[in-house]
Image 1: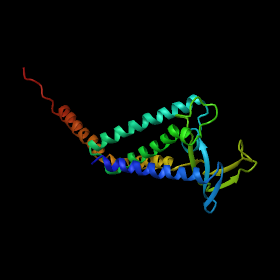
Image 2: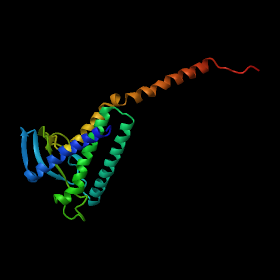
Image 3: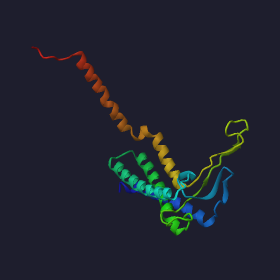
Image 4: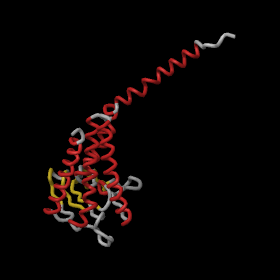
Length: 218
């Protein structure tokens, strides 16, 4: 039972992620865009054959390797989370691991099965299995402008922030990683306390030996 609540969090992320992707698949067409909150939050239906946040890995071998890596990472994170539960790690850290695991599994489902069940594998692949394209839809173009012509190298170019299109799984992974990075002192405070606790004792012992050496009397 102590493991179940964290795996349930991962399953909840998977459910939300897959529901959002299937809703987009059944109700939108590729590259269709819907404004949700003004123009800075939109739904934009894309198929991503590569990595998170719209990053692409063009070669066919690279896509297969990425899918296999995702599957291995999924099992690795699951094992690590179980070990951390056994070690009674901080609950916040375990929740973050569950978010990362849920996000990883959400994209694994796309890569492994969508090429078969949604028939969205790229043309020319040897098999639709493990070549499914990830469905992305979250788009936050917060602001955009054109660089002045006098700016070296990029003058006249169009700039948009934030341009990547991503999904719930990507968001879950990102949130979990960021919280871990910014909460290390809280999540690992026991380790931080133990590390310096021995060092001053060693220094004092060394100083005491130097100042009061004990030598045998001949």
